[in-house]
Amino acid sequence: MPMNMASGHEPQVFLYLSELLGKRIVDSEGRPIGRVLDLTGNIGGMYPPVIDVVVRLKEGRRTVMLPWQAIAVFHGTLTARPLRPEDFREPAFRSGELLLKETLLDKQVVDTDGAKIRRVNDLQFLMANKILYLVHVDVGFRGLLRRVGLERPIAFILRGLFDYVMTDQLISWKFVQPVSSPDLLRLTVAQNRLAQLHPADLADIIEELDIHQRSAVFGSLDVETAAETLEETDPKIQVSLIEGLSMESASDIIEEMSLSEAADLLGDLPRERVEGILREMEKEVAEDMKELLAHPEEKAGGLMTTSYLSFEPGVTAGEAMEKIRREAEDMDLIYYLYVVDGEERLLGVLTLRDLLVAPPATLLSDLMDTRVVSVNIEAKKERIADDFAKYGILAMPVVDDNDSLKGVILFKNLLEVVAPKLGR
Image 1 (spheres, rainbow, N blue to C red):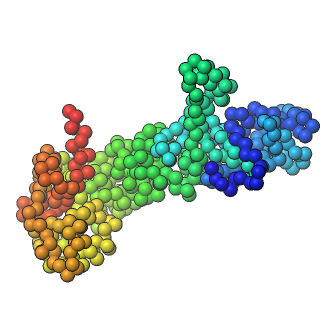
Image 2: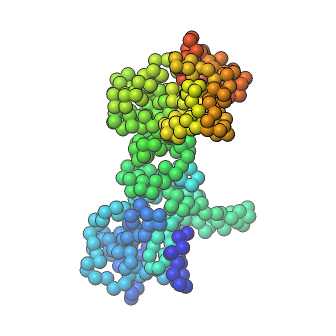
Image 3: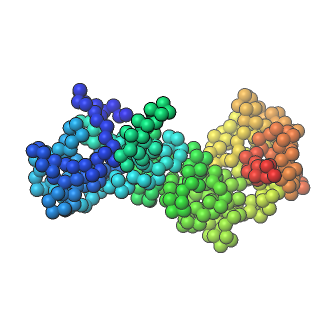
């Protein structure tokens, strides 16, 4: 709970939206003014304050908006201070202002703390410093019972017959990301709540959403987060998401993916779409992508990435470290470093650990292990899987018939191809 909500000894009161909806607002003499239809707020903040209350007036049955700060809460009664004509506004929203019941109640949201899709059954507010803050969403059964007026009798029955005490299932608003529309995603995207999730969790959430929400959530992500999430998403959904983007946007995201993952995705897209995306890419990346697309997915050439680090044997450990610092961010693999001659023939391998502990002047030819386990570019996935299991390595170099290094297969990429068949 935000500490700055407390002020002196002023009592803090928790209120639920279900308790406020339909409640009468009275004047200082106890005469009814009208009933609450909804509350409004700008939900982009960490704990957004309520701005207005939407009221159906008793006289004339007219719907108006009153400022919430004109309302006092005392022992469950909503009392309005003396109201002026200008306090009564026709229903019209200021910038960012939304109806909270209409926007959130019974809608899906992402719990970014638990990495789950949840349904909002109620909203909990905190009254402090005469301001009403949205602090939690209620996603539990108790929230449903509260809305239909059965919370107390059901709680009494459960406690008496089964010694069971119902608990609240509340999610702090700072962990809530509404997903019901692109507008709601844009309101809170500045806080980057979805980007705080692990890409695998975000992929699971996207797969649970319907096609419209899925596209809206994916479209709200920054390029880097979108690329990481796409790598974790089911291939069929990958295709759906990319086909919903412009060529330029699709190209930007795919360029941020690992080469092997990007090539797999492009291999599932229609040819015309692939050609359009490749045209938008940087020339060097497009050429690497075309090379990978030329190989069958079930063979080594289709599983490999060309984004790795290789050096000639006369390079020193210090020089190699400098290159790694410059280029590591764009590499799919930096743990293994490959040593090749002037014609790209594979001579040896060393690990990043070998490099870190070596004196800077040491030649890579003196550090490398010449007992390199490699696989031919035409090898099938079953043979590759056997070699991974036998030698216990994290990545395997791919060579052609002349022993020229053509790429590297990451264990993760092999697992994605082999794992679905392990249970058969």
